[in-house]
Amino acid sequence: MHIKIDEDLPRVATTLLGAHGHDAVSVFDQHLSGSKDPALWEVVQAESRFLVTADKGFGDIRRYPPGRYAGVLVLRPDEDGIRPLIDLLERVLHHYDLTALAGMTTVVSPRSIRIRRD
Image (tube, rainbow, N blue to C red; front, side):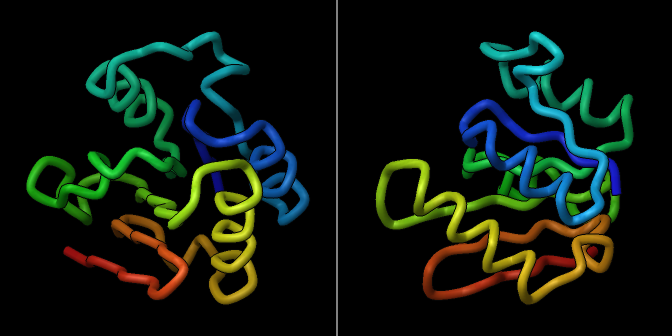
C-alpha cells in the first residue's frame, strides 16, 4: 500500500510501516513539512496515498468523505509524545491489514478503533 506519513508523526512511523511491506513516505522526505492541510491533501490525492496522521481535522468525514480517496488513519493518543503515537500505530498494524482500510476513515484511540465507510 502507498502511504503518506504526516509531519505530526515521528519518522520511525515510516520505518515501521515499511517493515510491514508498505511504500511509506513522510512529508519530511518530500520537503512538505509546514504545508497547510489543503495543500497536503492535494499531494496525497495526486499520489493516491493512504494518509496516516494525528491531525484530527482529517477525521472529519464531512470534509473528507470516505470512499473518495485512498484512506485516512487518524491516531488520537491520550498523551503527547512519540511512544503513544507509535503504540497506536502498532496496535492498528497488529489488528488490521491496512489494505482492508483503503478508502475508509479510521480513527484510533487507546479505547477504540472507529472505521467510517462510504
